[in-house]
Length: 302
Ligand code: EPU
Image 1 (tube, helix red, strand yellow):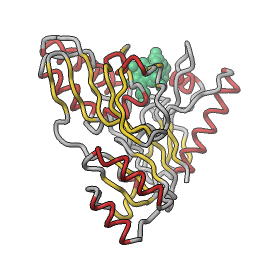
Image 2 (image 1 turned 90 degrees about the vertical axis):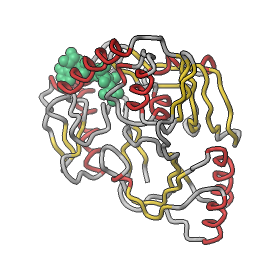
Image 3 (image 1 turned 45 degrees about the horizontal axis):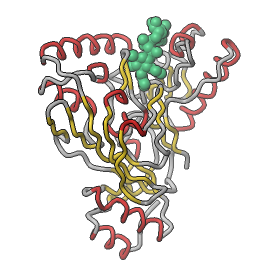
Image 4 (image 1 turned 120 degrees about the vertical axis):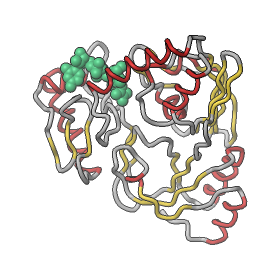
């Protein structure tokens, strides 16, 4: 979708938004798949409600792009523009056991920054790609921990109210890869309460998680992490593996040889290739094990 009206572009510029025309979402997502649209970086998130009001009044649909690490985007010219909050380094401020973190901050960078201030708890998240905002929305977790456990306060844009609001951590439900945020809420900033731990201890735990991850996940290939959630009491990766589907390929979309719940883009996979592979594997799991697999990855249709 293109914003061709110069007056609209001018009004957006007055709100601090410099339009980036015709960006490829393949370049902005870890899967390397996705079509083209205009991108609107929101430099001052106080202006977000006004920017969205402007887009609404002009009938311009929008989506919000975080770190792009858990996303499968349709190909071709996309029928919505994307908003995103550019990251400012380091995006974290520490006060005692509290870390105040911008949603745009890199998740791994945040874990390391907190570690340097002797604050731990999030070691398991070190290799999870993406932004803190994305991790909050999905309640990212690994190796027995999840980010939601540390959330004390969240500032977000609540689309239903058209304004930025602050919620207490207790007002939000954090379940397995699911939260009670509305789909169109946009995370802005979070206050985390983290346990004190000596830096050396945190680094040792981070090293162990890193090694586990490197040996079991295809970190050097284009992927969106695990493509399906695990059903209660079962491991999707193990089930796909047991069916001998590692290496199964449709076009350039392939079931990883290393971890069967990672689907990788080994060249120029299209969104269709990936969706066909997802549907095929889902159907085989249903037949063999009786589970209806739920997507872990978010899908943006055109
Ligand atoms: N397994 C296989 N073959 C495979 C993959 C896994 O046999 O191809 C077996 C493993 O050997 C292990 C079991 O399945 O016995 C579970 O595997 P793993 O420890 O890799 O955990 P997972 O359940 O597949 C979950 C999260 C990951 C997270 C890891 C580590 C989900 C969907 N996945 O994977 O998160 O990194 O645990 O804590 O919950 C993500 O969210 O994108 C993600 C990758």
